Length: 111
Image (tube, rainbow, N blue to C red):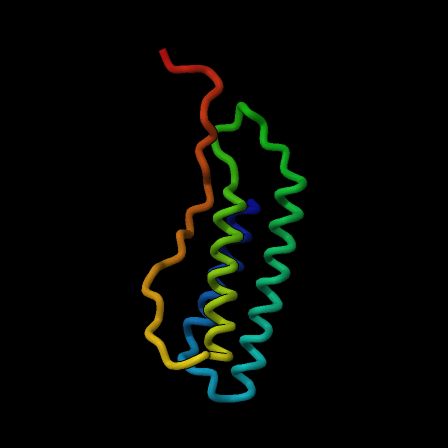
């Protein structure tokens, strides 16, 4: 359930950011500022979820909070760079990872 929520929020944030090419208007800048605030909220919720998680050693999968945090920082950096660019530069072609499920290593060796 938390994985789905985080993915939806990240995709919403990406859709808003990706749909706008240049921050030409005040309205667009306001909208991108809201995206930054939403990223702050998502990051705070993820931190709380990580602190509250009770990952058992027997669970096969667990949520990769570090990867989520890195992707949020990447989005935040892209929005901030767009709102206040130092100079015209080509976009960074690397993509977000988007997969936040980790395999938990088994406690017992396989026969």
